[in-house]
Image (cartoon, rainbow, N blue to C red):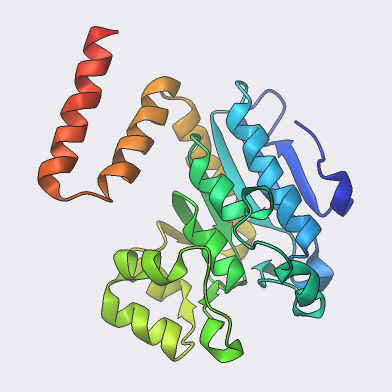
Length: 244
């Protein structure tokens, strides 16, 4: 693992959490622009998760933003470039690649996670939030329809009434609200966000890797089903393990 994405310079970084660690840390590294995403950064971020999924040396991933923001969303000064073509092109869609990544992803959110940044946070399997964290959906403000799943994921995580206010009124979700509503797993001081996220990822990485991958898949796939069919999915996967 090392610095990645020649298309965006060093704006998307990938490195091990520590020498020999099975945890990879992906960093959105554009702090002067609050980590706002250009199209080349989106492509690089998607590519990073695609490679990490295929890397047998990686058991879990931490996603963080450099500086005082996790990700301020799409760079609106480059909106024409960002939105040209198919916004759901898998090669340029980091959320799609995060959802396809079999390794657990721990988000380390300090500062703003705005719109596309909010959607990227929602694509993580667990979230560690700094006390400054603010999750904000501004799609309605700018007249841009969500395309990475926020309109459906958020209501399932925090409930439909809360999701309506967050999205329709562009109401910020603080770290305390996120923890209370089940969006964030932990709240820590901003200075401890990355270390706590790595701690959680390292705990995951110490477990049986094949079972972790399968367990994540069953949980995520089961959420799309009613309880009867979700239990059937669990039994199906159990029989697969038993027969192996």
